[in-house]
Length: 555
Ligand code: DX5
Ligand code: ZN
Image 1 (tube, rainbow, N blue to C red):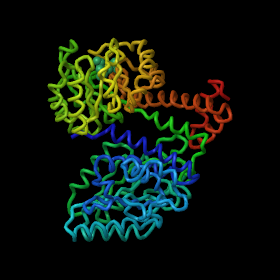
Image 2 (cartoon, rainbow, N blue to C red):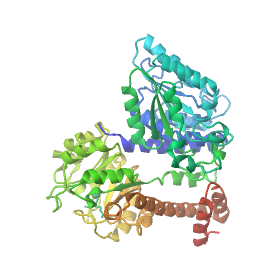
Image 3 (cartoon, rainbow, N blue to C red):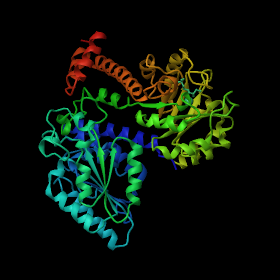
Image 4 (cartoon, helix red, strand yellow):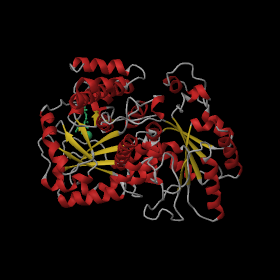
C-alpha cells in the first residue's frame, strides 16, 4: 500500500484554501494555527482516521479531538471536504446561529469536543479512550494540542493519568509551532529553552535545546519527534504509534505557524487575524505554488544506490525519483523493482518511480509491491484500456498515478478522460534514456500549449519537470507550471546535495515571488504590490521581495 501522497496533498491544499475563504468572509479567525496542523489533519482525514461523514455518530468511529479549538477553520475545512457538510457552509463561520463557530461545538455533527478552554482536550480524550477500552471497542482517539496550551497544568495531570492507566488507544499530536497568542512560546513559558531574540530558527539549529520530548518521556509517554509538515513522517509516526502497546504516544510535530503563506509563516500576528479580500487571490496563488524537489539517483554511483538514497535523505529531498529503464523502451538498462524493494527500508521519503519500460501493465504490481508511492508510466506504451487498468490498480493501492510524455509526444486523446484523476504529469524535457542531457527549449512552448487542455479536462494534479533541469532554468520551468522538479546531474551529480537542493529551492522561491508580484500588480497596481510586500515582516523577506518588485518596475 502506498502513501496516498498526492491525494493527501491535494486535499491539504484545498483545505488551506477553504480556511482562507472562511476566515476572510468571517473577518476573523485563526489561519496561523490552522495551517501549522494542516498536514497532520490531511494525513488523518485521508489515510488513517476511521469515520463515516454520512453517519457521524457511528459508534466504531475513531475520535478526533481538537484541543486547540481556536484552529477550528482547519478542522471545519477538512470536515467539509470529507462530506460532513457542504463547503458553502464554511461561509457562515463565526456567524450567529451557524454550527461552525470560532471554536468547535458539539452541535456540529462530527465534532467530538467543545474546544475553547485550552488545556482540557487531553483529559477529555483519555476519558473517551478509557470508555472505548471498557466497552471493548477498538477505536482510536487522536488529540491535537497546541504548544501554547501546554502552559496549562491540566495537560500535565492528563499526561500522568494516561501513563498510569497505560492508555494506548490514544495518540496525541503536539503542534509545536513555537508561537502562542501573545508571543513566542519560548519567551512566555519555554517547553524547550528560553529564546533570547526573535529568531525562531535558533530553536531548530541546536537539538540539545529541545526539551519537550524529554518532558513527555519522563511522564511515561512513548515520544516520536517529526517534521510536522512532511506527510510521510506523519504517516509513519501514526503507524508506529498505533503499534505501540502499554503506553500512550505523543507525536511532537515541529511545525510552522501560517505554513504555506510566506507572510504568515512564523509571524505571531497571524495567530488570530483574517486576510483582507484584495490579498486573497494572491494567497490562493501562493498556496497553489508549492513545489517538490526530486533528485534522480541514476545520476550518481549506480554501483552504490544505497549511498545515493542516503544523500537524498541528508539533502532533505521531497521525494526520490527512480528511473527504471528496461533496455527496450529506451536503450539503457538501470534497475527494476527488486532494487527498489531493497532500497525501500532506507527511508520513508516517497518513492517517485518513473517507468521507462515497455508494457508497463505487465509489471505494475511488482512496482506497487516494491513500495513505490508515485508511479509514472509512458503514454507511448499505453492505450486507453491498459492505462485504465493501471489507473485502477494504483488508486486501489493508494499509489499516486503519473503519466509521462516524451518530447515528441502530445497528450493522446485517450488520456483526456483520465486527466481529472491523474496525480502527476511528466512532460519530458529530454529524450528519455539517460541523465546529463540538455533541456529541450521547445518544452516551454509545449507546456503553454498543454495548459488549456489540462484546464478543460479538470487536471488537478502536479506537473513534474524531468530532464535537463538546472539552477539556470528552474525558475522559468516553474513559471511554465511545473511544481515537481527532477534533478539528476544538477543535484545528485553535485558533491553537496543538501546545499544544491537549498539553491534549487531559493531559485524557485524567487520565481514564485515574482509571479505573486505579477498577480498583485495585475489586480491592484503598485498600491496592492506595496500592501502585499509590507505584509512580510519576518526576517529579510520584505527587502528581498521589494528588490524583485523594483526590478520589475512595479514600485
Ligand atoms: C531521463 C530520466 C531523468 C534523468 C534526469 O530519462 O527520466 O529522470 O535521469 O537527469 P538530468 O536531470 O541529469 O537530466
Ligand atoms: Zn525520470
